[in-house]
Image 1: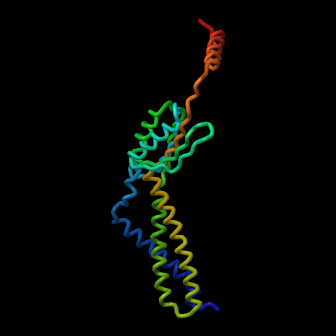
Image 2: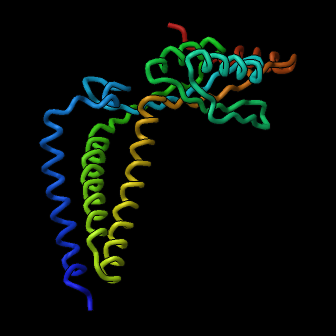
Image 3: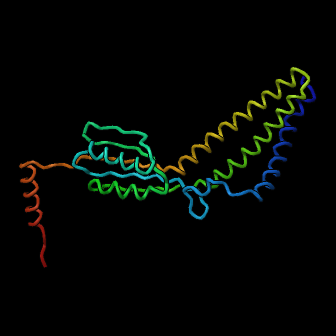
Length: 222
């Protein structure tokens, strides 16, 4: 049979969580704004920006080198670089959010832009919620550690260790998620595809001229 200590553990954990929740809310009323709220924010909102571009260039490898240099100048980084069989180069870079628009404009100067997109995702509510939940879990974990010191039987120790392991697992998961969100807010992702411009040979130019002439036959003039 489980001891009274073990049977009461779920109630103890719930009480600690509720108490820590009200405590954290009271503390938040007087807390200084978190530094993360200033990164990638508009009116205090936390925004994840992700951009995508395709540019036709004369030499894709040379353009990739220039793009890499541009990213380095703004203290960004190249996460992935891959060349395709068609001679194109795909780059995935991360740049400071404040520099994203400037980097995109400089990428436009590499050649002819054929695709350009920008998506913005607001993660403010998720970050605030995770912060609050993690504070509660940390308080619960600390209380469980104190309970562990008072446990007197093997059953009590096992029950507290099981609950402590579960709570710590949730804390680790939330910390990883918050770290990922903070990184994506401060460093925007930009996917760049550099394609070699098609160079028409003599036959190609002849075909293009024939098509232009034929198209004029169907123009109705007023």
